[in-house]
Amino acid sequence: MAVSHLSEDEQALIEAIREIALERVAPRAAEIDHTGEFPWDMKELLAQQDILAMPFPSEYGGIGASELAIVMAIEELSRHCATTGLLLAVQQLGSTPILLAGNEKQKRKYLPPLASGEWMAAYGLTEAGSGSDAAAMRTVAVREGDRYILNGSKRFITNGGLAQVNSIFALTDPKIGTRGISAFIVEKDFPGFSVGRIEDKMGIKGSQTAELIFTDCEVPAENLLGREGDGFKIAMMTLDRTRPGIGAQALGIAQGALDLAVSYSKQRVQFGRPIADNQGIQFMLADMATKIEASRLLVYNVAEMIDRGERDFSKYSAMAKMFASDAAMEVTNDAIQILGGYGYMKEYPAERMMRDAKITQIYEGTNQIQRLVIARDLLE
Ligand SMILES: Cc1cc2nc3c(=O)[nH]c(=O)nc-3n(C[C@H](O)[C@H](O)[C@H](O)COP(=O)(O)OP(=O)(O)OC[C@H]3O[C@@H](n4cnc5c(N)ncnc54)[C@H](O)[C@@H]3O)c2cc1C
Image (cartoon, rainbow, N blue to C red; front, side, top):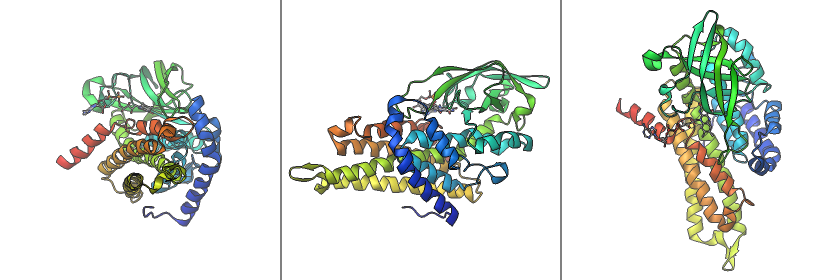
């Protein structure tokens, strides 16, 4: 286990989450994957246990957990069920624009119900024609008196249609590129907000991924986050802070796959002895464990940079997300190999873990985009 600097209270909290994950989350994971239904019971569990309150300061009803504790919580949940780990990661993703750029009135209104878990949050940046190139968005917001009128749509939005609070990015001035993007808090009950297609996915099956459609959607002007033109900066600053959470999700998935591979290899007998007695299997296990430990160090390190208030952590955040997600893909693939034919069957969780791991290389910026972030920092 990598070195960590949690307070005693937070150590106890992570210990409690580890137990909850084992006793309450693990038994639900296969069913959530099989039915593809949003796990309301897991959302309630995380709300009741104050796990969804972790990213929020105490003055807004949260428990003001450190970033390190948040990534460790996502890791522990994802070790058994990546969809459940994502509930915490996305609560943070959708709320971070408000935490970073919200004024006091906005924070007082929106953060307490998010901290209690009564409301869920979503983050709407991606569109059909703008994924990696987020600045190519087409959704527009036109000011009319005391409100903005939004037109356009967002694609692949996690918690889309379930989240009461949506941090939405739209063009207030299409002529000036990224400086013309603004951020808004959009409630799902605002007139003109609707939900389009709900995606059928390869993994994280219980997580709802939806299209959000804005048709003359009326957003009060007071729901603008920061000033007009601040949106792109808010979007990027948010991702810098939340990518470690995706690294942690990947880390948890990989740890779960290693746990499975170790126990299976000790039990499965071929040629008269456990397969774990073969050096070929031992070398695979050793490589898997080393990749996981390296991922853990990167994820915990950047979380602690954030906790220390360091400003220049974007590169480290990208490294943590990229390395941990690539490692998770390799480790889950190896876990299937170690389980042989059984690894390919739905009877064992290895194949689910591989399907779940794949998304961590794609969302919150693909790993090609993480490499661009890292290289840009090196070359500037
Ligand atoms: C399940 C799921 C949940 C998601 N949740 C959210 C969410 O909550 N909110 C949200 O806003 N978005 C969300 N997304 C969107 C996600 O962030 C995007 O899918 C991702 O950023 C990639 O965009 P794209 O799919 O349009 O791929 P594209 O940008 O079209 O990329 C296609 C391929 O080209 C590569 N590529 C693109 N540009 C470059 C380049 N300059 N150099 C090298 N390679 C490049 C990419 O790495 C990728 O391999 C989600 C996506 C999924 C699948």
